[in-house]
Length: 347
Image (tube, rainbow, N blue to C red; front, side):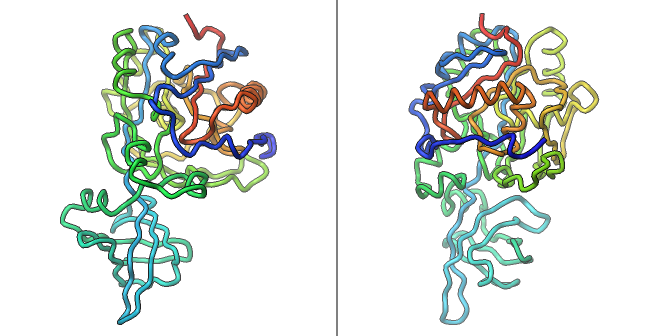
């Protein structure tokens, strides 16, 4: 299985830099088995059935991009920081320029937020923060960590603090959004509840590793990054009850899917509270997932491999060819797809 098997041509102008407004007006590609249908996210009320259970990732994106100053005597240097993940004595982070920082130095980001360099490697560092209220100080000083393919086109702004956060975000810790979930608003969630669709929340703190490229030609040798997740006993029981009753379990986003599949190593979902580095590619046997709602992914990415495992590589190639031909918007702020492996998707 070669990396080139998961490549495709994507016109630059199909990369979305802002989301659709309102959220539910985004386009939705519905793939049921071999069939493809062009709809909108608001049409999910007609697609999902009573008894379906949507699994939502309730992680909350932190404003992980910071600009600060390092002072040595009379000299100052501008330092750009991107937080990556919590560490035992602070946060692991990227710094630009990394070479201008030494262990023990302080970087000031605002009157309320500063950090000391606790450790440093050739690629990143550990920052220990000082603030009376870290979350509030970070919210004030930080900017949303837009994905590289958006950040290359424009800087983050105040609008991203709403746009790049789900309406059910609860537990802080992600440095990238579970982007399929960005298409939901309160009205759509309520309409689905009224139809008899149920919801289960899980938490997977999405890390910056989600954007790392695959660098090996034999994709089976790729080593996935690890991300921390939790499936509570209540969440596990609810998902298992839906399966037992014959309902469909439909993760919203690849992060929710990877987490519940990690928690279902025994064949049924068990409570889970740990890091997962599960890598799903064609040949994987899904344990609990019946369908997936997701955005459109990068060429040669592990997420494209995941959807190929669910739908079949040839089917995904047709889906993506269709999406490009029909000018669907791609990546984090782009349009959505609902992927149902069998052909029994719409009532």
